[in-house]
Length: 393
Image 1: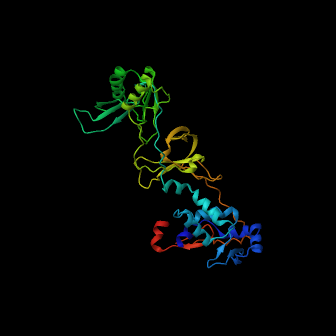
Image 2 (image 1 turned 90 degrees about the vertical axis):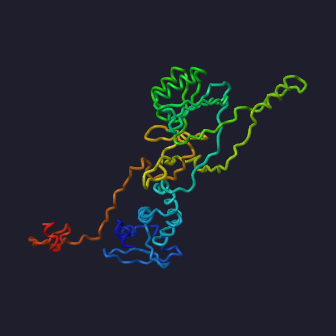
Image 3 (image 1 turned 180 degrees about the vertical axis):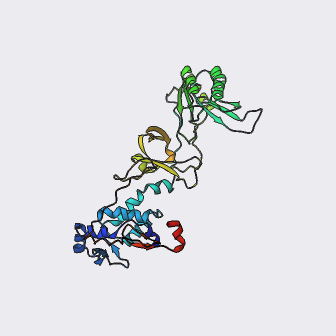
């Protein structure tokens, strides 16, 4: 209790002053059958109306100050919705207190960034089918690996149509080395691809690699950050044309179906979970997948959603649209009157001014202050212990 009183910045004199003209309180006192209101005098001369129908004396909180009292209770340890409702209803009273407190606790930005309920796990997707070999190539870097002949990295290149794999050892993973090896080991042998899929590594986002793709007429595609899962798609469709069983074409079609890979389902234990509110929320939180600092929240945000796709969202981060995988997102519950911006910025409202019933006369201040004492701003003379006199005077 002493800790709460030490950090509390709310004055019950303000609440008692507003209660005098509160129409909602007057209606509750007349119509409510479950609440029993009683007036308690304060030191300022005003009277505070409280409910005494339970074991605890619960003051009535006016509408404009309910969220302030909520923050005084919830911001101490950020408990859950149920625990916050229990604490608030045991200390204060107003109509629809359970509904209001539950909504505010669910919309707490600090709780949403820190608490983890369930991560999003979207279903495994598939690539679009291509019609030509070596037209779409996936490139990635593996390493660092145990050193072999001075090489510690490996440049992997996979053709989407044929699944042809090339692996080239590298001494380092610089942009110059990656661009030179991709040109000499793939473009010179199989030609320039129409589409090139890479991650967001600095080597593939460098000016040199972009210039190489521009010269070769290749369009670059980058995957979302911190999401390197590439699902291998089935590159063959079932036959859509029907042929006469008595012709040679039908026999040839049946023979070719026997030598091609059979389409099969992905066998894994992946449990799919996509929050239903992701389809309509205006802001989202982004999970931090890098190595986090001590006591760093698990999520960043909230960030504004610009575009929605089946596997990724385009969100506004520092004024730029960034594509983030849906597996790293969770919906943000934000009230309309809450400030939305960078996590480091906060919006503070001015403190209300208390109108005193009658100002008390100012105390007389002695003209001479004895040695070893000090005068406070209120006019009181305070004496300090002798062991502190040398540090103060």
